[in-house]
Amino acid sequence: RVLLEVNHLSKHFQLGPNQTLRAVDDVSFHIWQGETLGLVGESGCGKSTVGRTLLQLYKPTSGEIRFAGERVSDMTERKGHKAYTSQMQMIFQDPYSSLNPRMTVTEIISEGLMIHRPNLAKKERKEQVSALLELVGLSSRQANRYPHEFSGGQRQRIGIARALAVEPSFIVADEPIAALDVSIQAQIVNLLMDLQRQKQLTYLFIAHDLSMVKHISDRIAVMYLGQLVELAASDELYARPLHPYTEALLSAIPLPDPVQEQSRERIVLQGEIPNPLNPPSGCRFHTRCPKAFDICAKEIPSFAEVLPQHYVKCHLYGEKGE
Ligand code: SF4
Ligand code: MG
Image 1 (cartoon, rainbow, N blue to C red):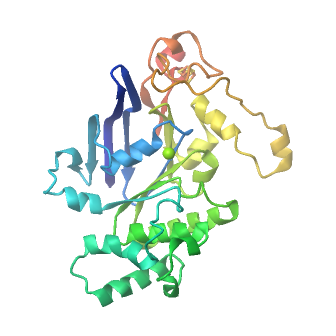
Image 2: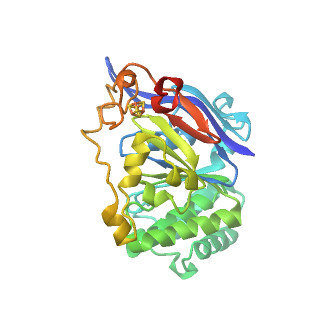
Image 3: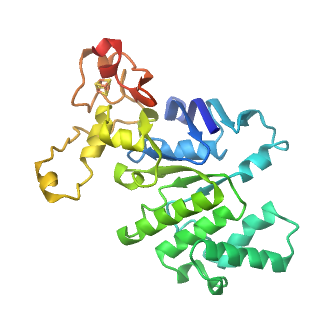
């Protein structure tokens, strides 16, 4: 079952009279209930904006979002909207700045509980907080401490407990491990995967490189300058990347085997990421693409299903590239 459907979603920010930032530009995808969709791209490519727009933190400029079949943008503030937003939560990249330093862990986690279950008596709420702390691998004895008394990994666990307090079905995790020590990253990923099984959660897992999403994602979408350029099942994407940008991202991941690592060819992209205020014509990747050919600068490739369930936005795979 499709939980979330995104059709031709755009989110533009007007920065000045003649300056429009097309942060997200005509993006379509869906997320199956219970899966993790990884969303990968360099910083500034629009992946956080996609996540925030799904959570209704931003209003879409155009396009539609459907949640469990219902068109979210049609919901009025009062009817349905609150039920919808409490179904969705965000886990933030920076567990240092996303937790209020003046609130205890109990207060932080209780905030959501009070909105979601206002009739809960104080004692029950305390029990809920304890249960949530245990669920994310912390102790209820730590409930009255403040965020600064915890390590980065523990703070991310608090952020996860806070998100789970309102019993969401869908979570956007925006680079939840990027700020953590490598040794802690796997623990948090494993925790998220355990919680997903226990609570039947659906995730959009945002990351800036492909190594971080491999383990957790069922499918992966690759984003470049506000657009999706490739989407496929994780195994498929790693085994058979089709888009030249995905190939470059994959070639940047170090291989565990040193012999393979030595003999492997690294694709180094030329040039800087173009200014998103003035994206290149045609294929937005053409200024950096090692495989660009004549029509790439002129015509916009379509996002097409080139292999079963494997989508790519590149002229190499259209009639024009053959
Ligand atoms: Fe490269 Fe052309 Fe494909 Fe764009 S359309 S990724 S420039 S080959
Ligand atoms: Mg971001």
